[in-house]
Length: 305
Image (cartoon, rainbow, N blue to C red; front, top):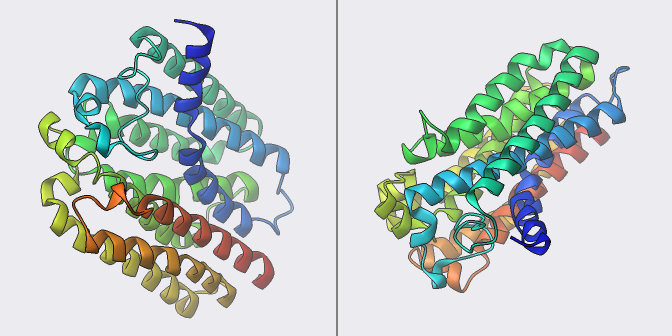
């Protein structure tokens, strides 16, 4: 394999589109701790680097397990998108299996080392959250649980990219636990799960054939399309309730900026549940929705707190 292949493979596995999910959740947790005396940009950036390293490692080992199951090879060319079908570093012959595992190992080791520095030099209280996040991150693709193959991957995503990352960020910055990061990140977790949901449609037939029984594969495309608006309604209803029933500032309703792209994603998915991804930007709209939610509630906390 050439150096060019290695750089290309690393770029695919780094996939900045996916790293946005971690950053969105970190922003929510950090905004809630912005007024704390212990707030530190240095430790926040170090946490972000650790998260990035673990994302690369997760993408690498996930690509191996999806390749072994046969799901990535089975995705038809017309069903491939920039958001689904895996990173395809093995399918496209960009990296060898050994190189992919090597990237998973070294990036995972770097991420764990940075996590250890955070725990021992800054805040021991984040250890258990980090450990739980590591177990769930591995278990999305990895044995023995392989949650993405059992219809539990979507729940895994809600928990990891909602409360775990947001609360870990808050605890690192504030030095104590609180409920606000959990509450405010739950709608975000649902919106990120909706992003995953629409990304599972292009891989539907490949996943079915490989035994990757995520919820979209289990339900079928038409029924799964009808679940998408439920995820969005649940997220926005929860945000409205949080604004009314908790001490969070009313300005967190800026998270409703996420509604327009969510509506477009729902409309296009319901209009053509079988092949919407070939002609409509549903996946970018789903991504934009959770990014706008994070930006909106983060701004709302900062200006309203």
